[in-house]
Amino acid sequence: MEEKKGFFRRLVAGLTKTRDNIVSGIDSIFSGFSSIDEDFYEEIEEILVMGDLGINATTAIIEDLKRKVKEEKIKEPSECKQLLIDSIKQQMDVGETAYEFENRKSVVLVIGVNGVGKTTSVGKLAGKLKDQGKKVVLAAADTFRAAAGEQLTEWANRARVDIISAQEGSDPASVVYDAVQAAKARQADVLLCDTAGRLHNKKNLMAELGKINRVIEREYPEAFRETLVVLDGTTGQNALAQAKEFSEVADITGIILTKLDGTAKGGIAVAIHSELGIPVKYIGVGESIDDLQKFDADQFVDALFNIAD
Ligand SMILES: Nc1nc2c(ncn2[C@@H]2O[C@H](COP(=O)(O)OP(=O)(O)OP(=O)(O)O)[C@@H](O)[C@H]2O)c(=O)[nH]1
Ligand SMILES: [Mg+2]
Image (cartoon, rainbow, N blue to C red; front, side):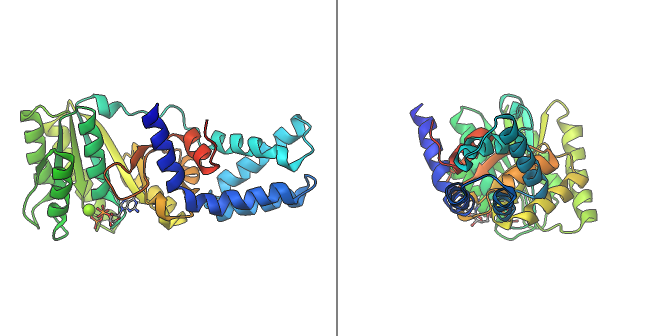
């Protein structure tokens, strides 16, 4: 319970900028309007779009709000706040988000463009799983960037888990091969693979991922598979575009949305859920090892509006 409260506080703190951007604006609308009319809805709509919730989600939220206002015969703008919160939560519902890989022998492939926070997220996730008593092995399959292996080694030390790495320039698929053998030999629970972020064109990316996937399928067919795309929350709509692109080349099972602590664009989490239907599984709200949280839509919206239960 205490731990849960601590998490919520961190989340509330991490979402400060997004809250200042979205919620303060909404509050001033609720207090500034004396009746519920088209202008009122338009102002709310504008704030949600500015907050990067995306057009689809915003339109659906406003329609839902209008319907509820009518049904419940609400007259006061201030009474709409809870309805709005409920509508946002509803938009984020993509069903039960599964974290099955945490309890299975699994391989987690972490992909994403340059600088979004892949290596950091792998490190944080390793720490989290280790704390749960899991045996974790890391694969430093970013052999492209100089010092990428060292960066991941630091995280491995921090999280107190094993790491398999190779020289800069080696074949990423061969690192994954070695890591799979190590994971099996050491009876690891979870193998986390960090990858390079510079395969900008689709063809290279597909070829690279295809090769890695074939190695895992051949060498470790019994492993449960998870492919997480890391997106930088500060890039707003661009993150959404990246998620779309990755979903065209890989079987994405979830998203890690990072750097929500440094942005006013946290509403992008809503857009990703409602426009792509891909679950955001984790969010990054800071740079330290404890700053990765499982994503809970209800909790996220409550933290956004700073409603403690
Ligand atoms: N504030 C904040 N910073 C983060 C978060 N996640 C990652 N970062 C920072 O973002 C920067 C890039 O993180 P990396 O993990 O190196 O990103 P990457 O995707 O592995 O980068 P490449 O390997 O170069 O493609 C680092 O300075 C991290 O500390 C987060 O949730 N919040
Ligand atoms: Mg990296």
